[in-house]
Image (tube, rainbow, N blue to C red; front, side, top):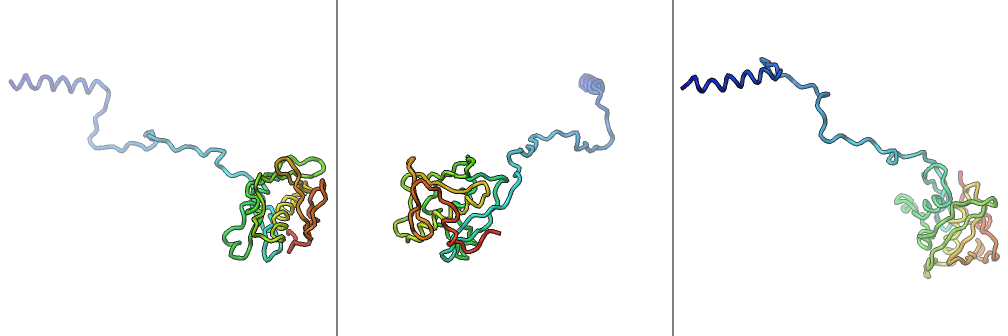
Length: 200
């Protein structure tokens, strides 16, 4: 009876030995490089890596005067990137220092055309319904336009700005409150007297 039970066991040992798996007297560590990970980590995507950056000036309002502050944007920004940086408004630390942005309140959806023609005049589109809040003073209204013009013309390629709404020209007031002549672009010189300090 015992011989009949041992026969299958002996056959199994012969089969295992034939598979070429060597027996060892003690456990052996498996090299880590021979183990394939179950879920490999993805390689960083090129789109995730930040590209070259540069500092630009945007103009905020402090104590009623326009003051340039630095913003870091993608290298070689066009007018749309400069305007977007302005419309983000002041940072929390800047707010504690008294910086405000009327342009961010009045024209939050304004868009600048990135095409800068040879004459350097950029078009800024004001969305329908956007305007300086009724409870703001005339000076605040001027500052809102001035912020946009001074920020965009800080780029040497931009010489002036024209504003449009519903495909119709919008003529803002200059620093003295006078409406700029119909058809004339708005330039930095129209608001230079409002600047507290020039960009460095």
